[in-house]
Length: 270
Image (cartoon, rainbow, N blue to C red):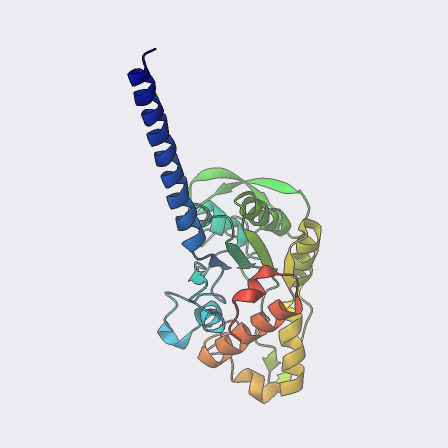
């Protein structure tokens, strides 16, 4: 090989290396510059309607972003009213989150209010089998007009967690907020099986758990029936108004701060 050819070859190699380094550097800069995203998934108690207070109904997810430094993290409320752990997945809502999920992101989930519905009613067919085991039942879904195998609440919850982990994201489980415990001006708090099951799944999967149900019930006891009743709309015993949703969002953050090892805490406002 002549000296001229060797020089040309060296020049080409040097150019290829320079291009490779430039591409690698550019990709690295983009990754470093990207903000993580906190995705919220759940039912209407997290996001009611379009999340803008239609009918004076609000979910706590509409106010959670105000507790975070949005220069450092994005908060996307992807919850949808009427969904259960089952239908949030079967309707493709979870897939639309997964497609955007990247390493370093967070998924905070809260389900349970609709999981106790019938498995195969003609209105919504959204219920799940009670518990956290691997039981299942094949049904004919009157909405989709197809056969469907329905699993337990815990089975679907684990699926959220495991798929989030597989994408390099951090999963956070919240127990469901209590329904309005005030009846005839009397505060009557009850145990919630879904709160217990959410805790058990989070423990098994070794992810952060926010005992939102217990935190709020403790606060309700301190406030009393009259104050608590003002957090809810007159339309039903499940949905909060703006004041109640803000109160619930603050309780989420309180529970998050108690989990000192959760890396999401570093994005909270001072």
